[in-house]
Image 1: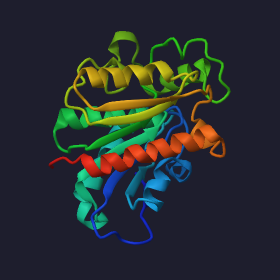
Image 2 (image 1 turned 45 degrees about the vertical axis):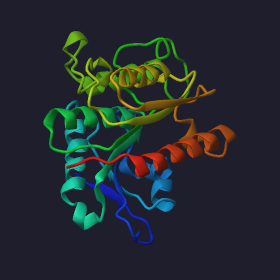
Image 3 (image 1 turned 90 degrees about the vertical axis):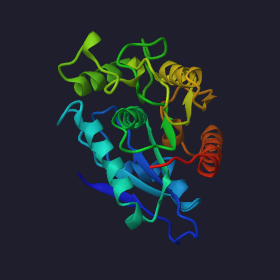
Image 4 (image 1 turned 30 degrees about the horizontal axis):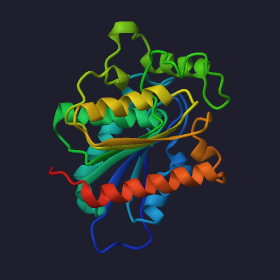
Length: 256
């Protein structure tokens, strides 16, 4: 598996956070290079973070659990090579958008289950978490992502799994125990397909005693911040995201 590594131009005095950033694409498309139009890029350029973006296997090539295995292996690589990357292992973070956000949550669940690595903060932006229709993903006709494409993505990713056989490591919305997961921040459009599952995830985290928050924007466009970065709403989302990241970088640390 190949990975892209983004480093700041100048080395900081203090070891920076190491961030695993996972691209979107509905589990069926996308590439690691999408990190260059993602919210992760300013974390490198403006705040000195080190970002690792994995070229995980897509569902049409290899369904679940291939992508999860690839992303979790990338996280372990980031931890095990912390000295080489010059990162602070107490501030390992995971994030991504859409399907990458779903994989980010799945990686957090896998890390909790295995106990091999501790994650300080998670940033699953408008994450793809639920293989079941929700009130916002059902009968959604958005031109970026919609019900038809959502069903296509989940069917490809889950392969032969269906119904009650689907584990939470594949569709994290099926998780029932949210204790011990990392603090989280996300944002989502109010009329986009993943609105309900995003809100539900944050509510479950808070109910389990996990610090978590979500900003909601008046948009029906999935990934509006990446696709229309020039809009005022996108600039607002970017600023709020970076503010949350700065807080996490200053306040959230874990032991490895």
